[in-house]
Length: 115
Ligand code: AMP
Ligand code: ZN
Image (cartoon, rainbow, N blue to C red; front, side, top):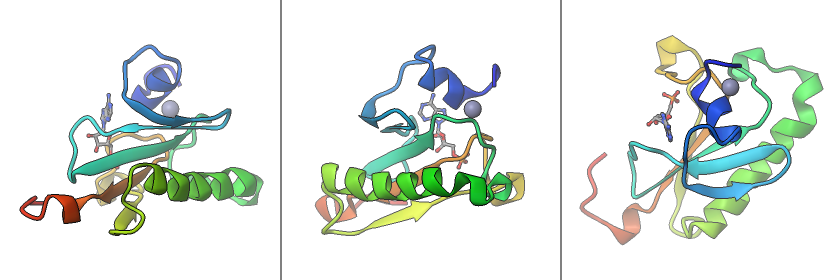
């Protein structure tokens, strides 16, 4: 999608701090973090949200959740705990209409962090 921020990040047209990449998925730090660790896990395929998936996306959705688990380990939030959030649709606060999972964590290392 030409006017999609995350598609532009995937194509390298907008810079990002990548923490993970493979042929199907990219993950990068959120530009406006809501937690000490705030990573977005994004499929390279442009899918608008979970409202737009079906059984044809089974493998990709499985890979995304496994990537979430691996990135949580890599960013050291797996033991202290983390939230995984997907906003679906404007009424849920989805600003970027390209499916993504937020990984939010790291509060234990910065106990005074305010969310
Ligand atoms: P959502 O509201 O679930 O669509 O979340 C979109 C997220 O994308 C927000 O947390 C933004 O801070 C983040 N975001 C927007 N633009 C960028 C960007 N260029 N690089 C990294 N994160 C971004
Ligand atoms: Zn996109």
